[in-house]
Image (cartoon, rainbow, N blue to C red; front, side):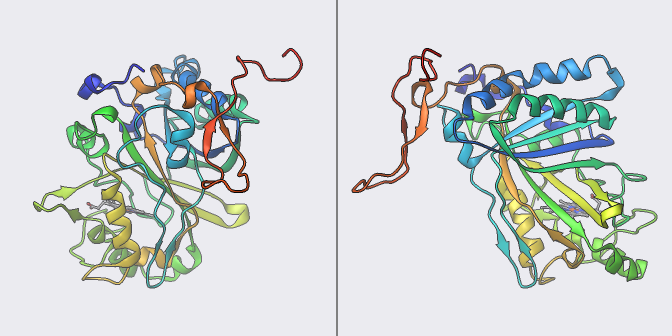
Length: 349
Ligand code: HEM
C-alpha cells in the first residue's frame, strides 16, 4: 500500500476539516458477507465520484468523508488496525441511555446545496446496492442562523484553522494512520413540545448560552460547561463538530444529527460520559431530557492517501466466513477461502 509509516505527517486528510455547509447527507451502512470487493472498489473511486459531481459547481463546496467501522476493518484491509478503532461504547446513566447501533461504513457528504449531496449519495448507493445494508440515512440542513432545532446557535466554539487540525487529525502517535481521524455520530430526536414549554431562561441555563445573542453564560451544569473538558495538563481537549438539524414536520420528527471528529475517540467519549453519567456539578446533561439518542456509531476515517492506494484484501485477496463445525475450538472464524482463480465458481464464469 502507498500508506506507510514514512508517508508520515504529509498524509492528506479526506474532507474532515470542512468547510461547514448548509446541507449534508449521512449514510450508515453495514457490509453484507461477500460485499467486501465492491465496497473497496467504491472506496477507491469515491474521490473521483466527488469530483465528477462537484467540479462543475464551484460554489457547491461538495466534500466527502468515508469512515470504516471496527468490525469491517479486518474484512476489508490487510493493514495494521488504527490503534484506537473499536465499536461505539454504549452508555447508561442515571436517566438516559446512549445506544450502540450497527455500522460498518459512514458517508458524510457536505455541500452548500442538498442536490449535490443527493447526487453523490445516489452514485455511491448505485455502486453498493446488493453489497451493503442501509442502517440509517439522514438528510440534514442548516436552520436559520446556524441554529439547532432547539433554537440555539450550534457550532460556535468549534476549533478553527491549526486548532481544528490538531483536534481532528491523528498525528505521529499512530504512524500508520497519520492524517486519519475518528468520528462518532449519534442521531438525536427532540421532544420539541416539552422543550418549548420551558421559559427561554430555563433553556439558556440548560445550554449555557443566551438564545438570542449566543453569548456564553457562567453556568456550571450546562451542556457547554459539561462539554468543556481538560486533559492532565489542564489544556482544553477539543473535537470538531458539524451537527445538522433534520426532521419531518409531517411526522412530527425533529432532530439533531451529532457528528464529532477527533484525533482520538477518547475525547468525544469523555464528553459523552459526562453528558450521560454526569460529573461533580450535574448528574447528567439536561439537554438529554429533551433529546433522545437513537443511534451511536464510531468509525475510523482514513486519509485521502489511503483511499488513493488501498492496501490489499486480507487473506491474499479471498476472505470468507467458514461455518462452525463440531469440535472446532473457534467457530465462525475468518479464514482464507479456497482459491477460485478469480472465477465465481459457477460454470465457466
Ligand atoms: C456546544 C447543541 C450534542 C459537544 C453546543 C452548543 C449547542 C449545542 C447549542 C453551544 C454552541 C457551540 O456549539 O459552541 C447540541 C445539541 C446536541 C448536542 C442540540 C444533541 C442533541 C453534543 C454531543 C457532544 C457535544 C453528543 C459531544 C459528545 C459539544 C461541545 C460544545 C458544544 C464540545 C462546545 C463546548 C465549549 O463551549 O467549549 N452544543 N449539542 N454536543 N457541544 Fe453540543
